[in-house]
Length: 101
Image (cartoon, rainbow, N blue to C red; front, side, top):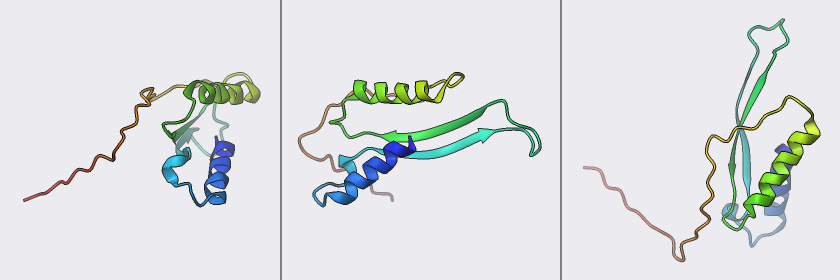
């Protein structure tokens, strides 16, 4: 995942015509494992916040992630917390004003 992040960061930096919404973002947001400092944990859980541009081929991206898991070896599973598949793009930005009284 962090390789994909670096690739997208490089892409964004190399093209002034791209904005953050034109590239995928991938951030490691949570990490959990182990119960004490002198015991090797039996499991490690990593949570990534991944945001893909609407032009991303979702099936190809998912195959890429599954390929990384295969390369990593046995005992690694993937759980989607939220998986959006609607890639509908609006032709005009939606602007909302919120006012509090």
